[in-house]
Length: 147
Figure 1 (cartoon, rainbow, N blue to C red):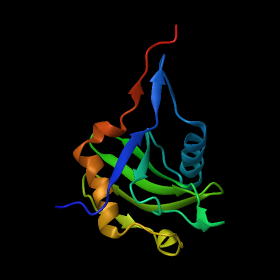
Figure 2: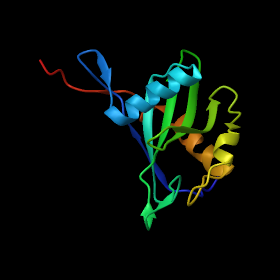
Figure 3: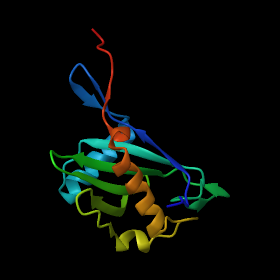
Figure 4: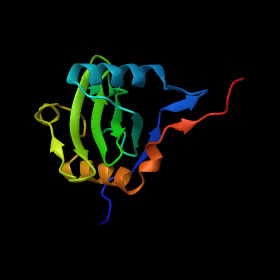
């Protein structure tokens, strides 16, 4: 299938001396969303788009700097992924899926949002498929010991 969207995925979690951490803002966002919705996560990644309008609002003649994040969980026999917009004052769930059945649950919340450009269902599927084809790209980075 020919891709319709250009993007890169940047893993955000790292482990040093047995402790997992990540950049403060995305990590706090993921923890808040996990707590409010009721899920656990052990993977966190940022999606960068070539089209800078995606999931951004027009503001003061420019675009906002919202992050699009993958919050996921690796299990023994499955991989669960969710896609979110971190708007700075809350979270907008885009969609979720798991590797076993690959049924994507797009949210009505995202459908109702107004962005300069939103992801299509096919583009959301492309992002999830990219992770399913190479789940290692969202693995926790092992950092050298600081001791």
